[in-house]
Length: 441
Image (cartoon, rainbow, N blue to C red):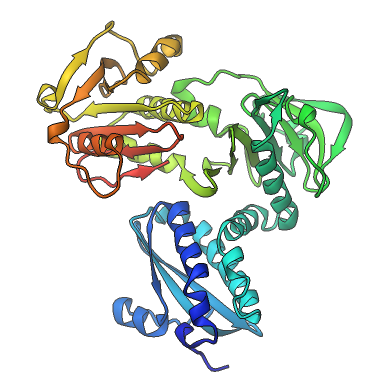
């Protein structure tokens, strides 16, 4: 079959309007990156990177560096390469999610090949939210579950995130697993919890509205329904240790001691927000009508490497920013770099009591009040609060682009240490330190 450059395909102009815009915005939001569209990849990739896509037509993903990757959108006809475009992704973090990128490319190729037969009439609908859902479903399901059933669970939790019980939104959770015996303690190795059999198992049926009273019973933090690959819920699993300890954030939030193998954790974490977590801590979050991938283990490592935080300190910081995000409470946290004269940056500072720490569970109620008070909260590398309600000298802050005042201030503080901005919409942006790339959670 003769290869044709993507820009020479029939209906290319139709694709280059809404479908292309949808795809670029979707991937930019999902990875927190920039996306460049290349419609002549056989020439451009060869010229810029020495990559000949026609010599290896079965490959569609190239990770050039930690912050740069190429994703081909291939059109296959009778299993042969008919055409392709390329998305050049930059300013992201890609080296630790290579498997996800390959599944995304496979899903994009699957979608484009089908849409090509319809002259891309359905491309705008397929290349947004639907593409990410398909990618997530195939990532979790390969060799373990029917991806179509996984897609149903995504749709179910999308509905649950917008559901209220007795007039109030609620959280809930479910663990999809093939290892019910392990959760019941019938296999070696503990899942750090107890499994209780439901008197009447529930079959999850596509098309049926979720039963609010049932889902309300699992809180998605300490208790979760267990679901089989055939979508049968027959057990409730309750963690033995239900304390959300700042020192063990990854273990308590991402259930790193409980999830194993092909398990998938679904949960509603806030109104109109739900997430899906893999063993190891990779999380997919749906909020504000868009998907985002969070690599918590990597973020944790980067905080330790770029800011010199001890594991206990970085875990505590992640705990608090995630907790404030879930509560939709704004906050600005700053850890000045060694040798920084904070008084030259701040117009006012307040002190409360010596020794209050983000790492101490007993201090949590007071720490929550401090972190959500107006102004910036200053902490040291041990997560001990030094000052609160600090006003930054705005004359030193240079607004950039369309960023809000809070984000501009956080970016400015990040030039002199570690800064974290939690917005009222639940978004979190971390500025790890001078010269380091910011991270959107």
